[in-house]
Image 1 (spheres, rainbow, N blue to C red):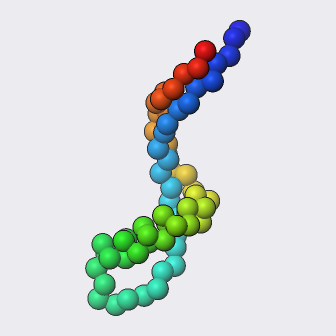
Image 2: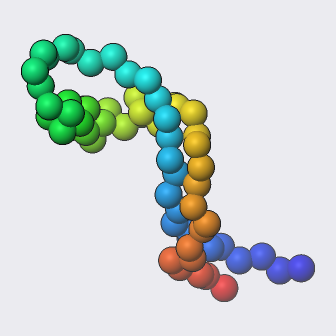
Length: 64
């Protein structure tokens, strides 16, 4: 059997409990924005969480 290298793309859903500074009367979307900004700059802190599900892979490049 021959082999080929295939580049795939898929989405993973994580679930993680985090502790954030408390700002009373702050709307949920504001907290989500702060967490999102931190996640963008500290990805490794958020990828060590429980994996909930993943999508089916999609081939984006094939090399024979």
